[in-house]
Amino acid sequence: MTDDQSPFTIPPEFARDAARRLLADLVAIPSHGANEGPILEYLVARFRRQTIPCRITEVNGAPMNVVAEVGQGARAIILNSHVDTVPPGDRALWHTDPMIPTEKDGHIYGRGAGDAKGCLAAMIVAFEALAARRERLPVRVVLMAVGGEERGGIGTKTEIANGMRADAAIVGESTLLEPKLAHKGVLRLEVEVKGKAAHASDPEAGVNAVVAMASVIAALDRLAAEVRSRQERHTGRASLVISTITGGVALNVIPASCVISIDRRVLPTETEDRAREEIVRTVTAALPAGAGATVEVRTVRFVAPSATPENASIVRAAEQAASELLGRPVRASGFTATCDMTYLVNGGRIPSIILGPDSIALAHQADERMSIDEMTRAVALYLRTVEIWAADHGI
Ligand SMILES: [Zn+2]
Image (cartoon, rainbow, N blue to C red; front, side, top):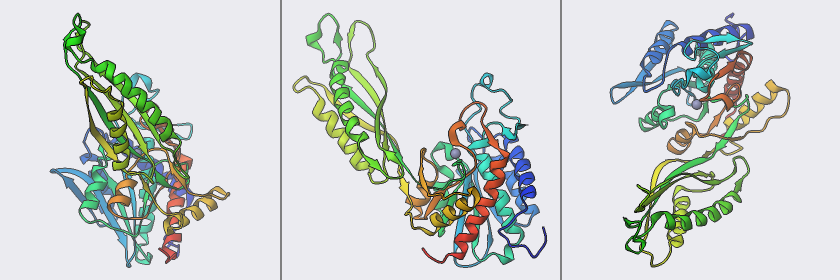
């Protein structure tokens, strides 16, 4: 690299080699099971060698995130991706050792190679290119390598709670190099029907919770059909699925309890309260009258949906950068999974997109991998997106 180059360009061969080597290093450092420390230490040492200012954020005494920042000016953009992974899972299903990065057929295989260490590696190589010419950057660029993403977004939530704000953010998750501006939320509930236990030889002495649950399930199934008819342009259909059922304790006992779980995917136009309320109303109305059964609905987990307006500067910048890179018109669309975008948008009010190399299809599975070509192109895509965004003084 020579000094007269723009901070937003990088020779492709340099990007490829840097991203490939960085991803191999990241995969070789285990970061599942609430163990972010070693991979964060690696990043801190790497940034310090390049005199990039950075800090570690701890949560309950445990290292959770590395945040690094370069550039100047009033406006700031966040590059966010996660360092933690899910566990390797059943090693017999893998064709390589999931904890040893293995290069094969233009890909790097290993746990976390796709979700999201390949995205993070491309972001870091782009960030380091900006840092190398930081005195010429017209905006501030914040690299946020977060932990706890697979445990409910702990890292990103913590930064937002500590006051981190910016004018735009890019979340690094695999999107085949196309920007995503919205994702559905998820509401997980347990519904328990309570009856009364009795000996099976004397059914009138009890209230059968499993039989009462049958009416509740039929009513929820009718509600599920109505929920499926709701659609939003980017994220597609809402959904309601009954995913587990348990009930009864013995072959000769009237069951006193029956519990189902519900997975409800919520559109950006829906709210947690409304989605929950219609389920409570449905199950309450479905209980057989006068039979003595009661019902309780418990929230297990809620991740809010989020969406960024189509005309936001970061959306337009990423669409233009992706269109140039892919050689065809690209419009931002919806993301199929939830991710840390929800905390940046809902908690920090930061216009955000999701953007990264390769497909999310192999995330959390055996033989997880990342295409080195896609990762190399992602480096250029992140740089060009920041360049266009920095030059645009719109919203
Ligand atoms: Zn991820």
